[in-house]
Length: 315
Image (cartoon, rainbow, N blue to C red; front, side):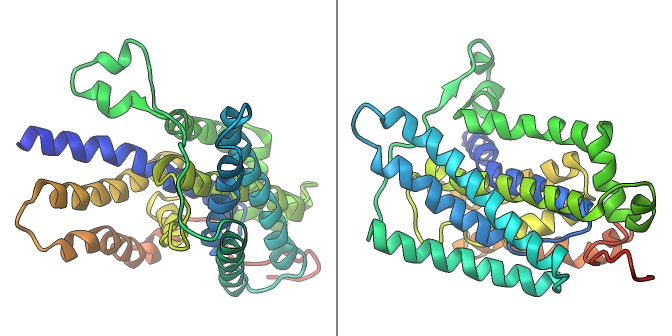
């Protein structure tokens, strides 16, 4: 019983972490560039709906295999557009980032829900992205089913962790991103266009948040509903603080939250006598603890996080 329970928790926790991991990695680039995007939730909502739409309309017929691929592409494109919108408001117009983020969250959630009721009308499912077992590795006892028996987006998301680390710490563009969030005036004096870098980071972050939302509707739930994202966008922002603005730290935070989520599901399925309300609450308690520690973590983060850059003003 204990072996099966542990296996179920771990095997559910890995795919549950993907949407958070993608959104958190994108938010990490935003914050490294000096912008925190509380609108991540709204971008994920739009990505979840717009990613679901092509898969829903193309779920039958010869183009059915391309519906899911098109869905992910549309979700990423929508994320880029919303990232550009947020950049226009916060980078160009220098609006307060927290308020603008809440506005973007409300915009994405409201538009996605309205379009869903207009084009689809009710909860319905799609086939979704099927699991792909990695030959050989999936046969490893215990670990094979936990790590190597998932849909391709799970592998893509985990490969994004080393890719993000390489881009952030080993490329000229990554250096520009870190400079834009830490010492934007020094970066500007070296010829770096700080606002352009922040635009680029927000576009990348938006695309990844859109992919995270599409993962929820196409791979995890295989349906769309108004409450599908369920606060994961805000959790993604908190996980960046928890992970100390590092891809590996973000991965650890995403796994921690997803394992807590899978634990409460496993407890209910196993019929263990434990108040399920506390089990459901557990993942969000972890987020509160993360936010409570964020003040100390903030000292290690980008020094100009949340501060609009204006080369004509002294700080």
